[in-house]
Each structure stands twice: as structure tokens, then as C-alpha cells.
Image (tube, rainbow, N blue to C red; front, side):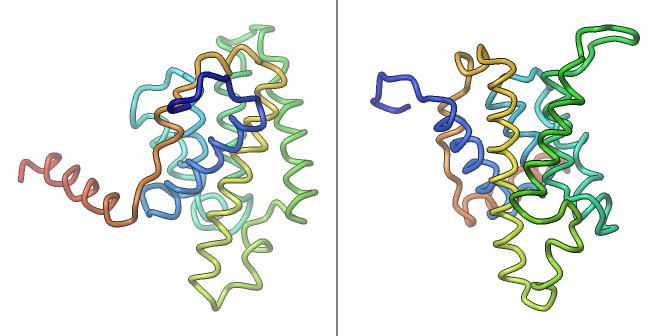
Length: 190
């Protein structure tokens, strides 16, 4: 942490990941599943190339492709657990932690929010877009926290390689829109 020589504990690190994921969602840069996977990948050194994490999670928002089913934040978190705890080749026995961790994440998520279904989670806010958006941002952050705590229980060494500068960054809505315009202009040679 900036100016602080003490190492943050797992709860602090999980909170940092949660805040960063929530910030990326609330500034309109990423959707729920994308924010969770991207922050966990980059913040914990998952190794996916920049942008690949977003591409992998881009079909999951709004309950799996806008179907209203499984919460995108939960789906993105499950992908992140697989990234760090999953098997690395067919038939390998080194991924036995991924499925139990995903099951535990599912149960903790359901216990915290009452459902894993996007449609159910947002039902009461269907006609209040501003509150709906804020709630989804909060769920995105809290889900990233839950997944990070589970992951650090299984792989405590990941805490030593966290990108604290990235995790401490807080983007403004206006700054994020400017960066999006610059990215679009660069992509199309404008």
C-alpha cells in the first residue's frame, strides 16, 4: 500500500479487490462478470493476457447473456476460481480444488444475497434503474471479495504477488469515459 510498509491481510486484500471490481462496474468500464474476473486476474497475477479476461467473461453479464439466470458476478468469480485452482490439462489431478471452491462460493453467495439468480436479485429494483445499477455494483464488489477470500485460503502465496498499485487505483466516471474514447479512437485509427 502506498507509504505503508506493512503487508495487508487477506481481508484487506479481498476488500481491495472488491472495491476495484465495484469501481470498474460503477464507472461503466466493465460489466459484473468482466469486472470480477479482470480484477482477480490482474490483481492476483492470474496470467491471462490483458483483455482476454474480459473476452472470456463477456457472455456472462445480466444472468448469462441477458437471460436473467445465474448472476454474472458469481459466474465471473467461478471463472476466476478455475483460473487459479482448476486443472491445467485434460486428465490432470491438480484441479481438485476448483469445484469445491466454486460450490462454497455459490453457497456463501446465496447465503449473503438470498439467491444466485440475476432476475430474482434485481426483481425489486426493476423499475429503478439507478438503484438497480448501484446494487449490481455492490454485488460485483462483494462477490469479488468472497471469491478472493476463498482463493487466498487455498493459495495464500498469491497474497505476496498482488498488484497493489492496480488494486488501489480508483477511476472516476469521467476519466473512464475519456479512456474508453481514446481506446475506440486507437482501435479505429482516429
